[in-house]
Length: 126
Image 1 (cartoon, helix red, strand yellow):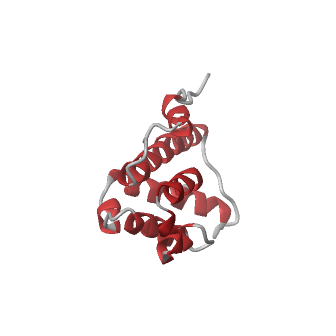
Image 2 (spheres, rainbow, N blue to C red; image 1 turned 30 degrees about the horizontal axis):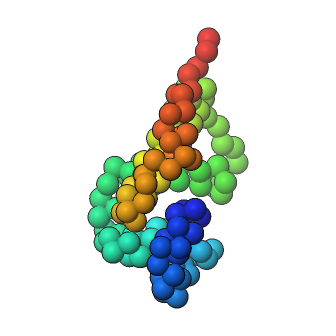
């Protein structure tokens, strides 16, 4: 959201004084920053939470949290699971960034998003 936040501030410098803008740039929890982005773009956060993007992002974050904050003594994924998770990363990040840029009326195909969208799928080679 860094580049998009910069662009929004350039388009309308008054938003930089809002609580939502400050929250986006803070170290607030991820969910809070997503909600602030939605509100900043006059889009109800509840609408985003009802999308496939949010559902997929939540699942991917669970995998990430399972790895980063392990409750179990070991964390393992099989090769097939790794391929699936990495491809989910590609699709979820692209979909989420497109969605957030769309509600901000910004080009959803900004170069970084376009690179993610056109990146090849990861395949298991045997």
